Structure formats: C-alpha cells, structure tokens
Image (tube, rainbow, N blue to C red; front, side, top):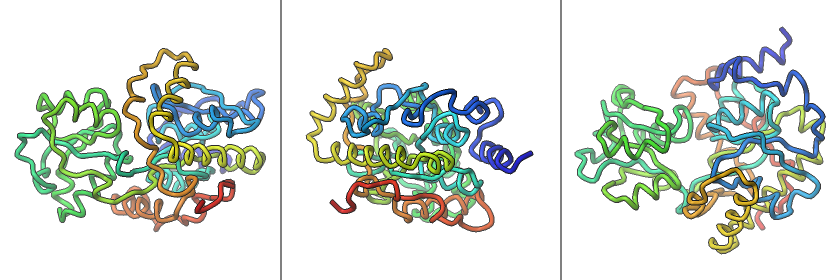
Length: 338
C-alpha cells in the first residue's frame, strides 16, 4: 500500500470515517473540473464566508461548486483530505487531530469563532437542581457532535471548575440531532444541553432555560475553526488558493463592518437565488461569524489550546504535533491589522 494511501486511511479512521465515506475524488481526480472551480459542501439555511465572498465578487475568476451539504466539521475536512471537495471547514480540535494523523492538508484561514454575539452555551431547565459543574457528575449532557467544539467546551468547563478526572468522566455525553436537543431537554430525557446559534436563540425565546456557562464567558473571543485545503492542491494551484483565501478574508471583514440588517438581507438573497428549498428563518438569528483575527488570520494559540485538550483525552499520542506544519497564513493577502 502506498504511503499516501496509508496516511489517508489512518486519517479517516481517526476522525471517524471509513471506507464507505470515501468518495471518488482521489481515485478519479477532478473529473474535468478546472482548478478555478472549487468544490465544497454547505449547510442548509446558512451562508458560509466562502459563499458570501463569491456573492460579493471577492473571488475573482474563482468559482464555487456546491456538491451537497455536510453533516459535521469532521466529515467536511475528511472530504477535503479524500479529494472529494477542494476545501472543508471544521473545529480546530478536529484540524489538530487530522494533522496528528499526518493527513496531507493545511489550514489556510479561520472561518468561524466565538464572540459576544456568537457562542455556545450549556443550558439546563430553569427549575433544575443543577447549579454548577460539580452537579453534572453522573448526568446526561447532549450536544450536536462528540469529539468536536461542543465537547471541548464542556470538558474545559468541567476542568476549570475543578472536577477531578473520575467525576468529569462520569458525565455522560450524548450526540443528538440539533433540532431534537431542546425537546429532549424539556422532556427530561437529558439533564443539560450545549446549544448555539439559532438553536440557542430559539430555545431562549421559548423560555424556561438557564445557562450554567458559555464558551465566550469561559474563554473570551477566539477563532474556533478553519478551512483546510489539500497540500497537493496548494502546491499545484497557489494562485487559486491565494485568490480564494484572500476573498474569504475580505468577506469576513465586510460582514464585520457592515450593519447586521444589510448582511442578513444579502444572505437572504443568496439563499433564495440558489433555489435549494431552504428555510430562511435561521438567517434571522445571524449575529456574527465570530472570527477573532483580522481577515481570518490563524494564530498558533488557537490550535495549541485544543492540542492540549486532545492530549489530555488521549486522542493524540507522542506529543503535540508541530503546529507550524498544521496551518499557514501565506495565502492570505488581506492586510494584517487593517
């Protein structure tokens, strides 16, 4: 088995994929798709920074080709590593885990994060006896995906609250479809839930919930996830990568300096124009992409904090991966600090 195939299989195993998850991208090449057309996966009812960049005209001659919607960040970057898409985005912990498996991809720009407007909270019912992290021992906590942002937030909350390893391990973590999580909490099927974005805001509108903590209160503002691209694509098409990354950077800054109602109005037009029979309601709750650095520039500390988390969990062994090999800002031409 060639080394590249071994590396790819190791990565797919590590992030939870398998042979059935691997598409035809690596085996059959780009199937005639020009390098200036970037294949990607989206999210229903959502406008990603890349989609916004294209609509604003910031990608020049680079075009995006939607190939479907992803189910999670780890699945999205798995698809990028497999060659089924040309970029994918995930929580930085998943990106570090990928790098530890020596997958041939590199993070090129931050695309989502945590700030005062965009965060994940840990919620219980208002009349719940649970008051702090110690009360969660032996309880059931639901989230959208295990091993990603929500679980990292929960683990950090438990650790910083002083729970010992055994007490923290007794907290039962459950992955539930996001649309079912609020209902499961209100029916008493779970004791607490990690909720973010529209699901958090809708649940709070319905009333009767109380927050134990949130990741902005815990960690402050930070970029939490990055787009990755395959090393082979970066080596073969650096100009395309530069155009794409810099365009996304410009879109992030446009969304930051433009009044929210204008951003949402443009997002609504984008969703209507793509005609995928999507609900526009989630856009009503958009507040921010949450990216911390100017133009989405990646900071090593944003990866290092989750590398330490993965080491504590035993998910990566042999020491922290060389962070300088995980990401690059070289394709980002947006002026730093502007």
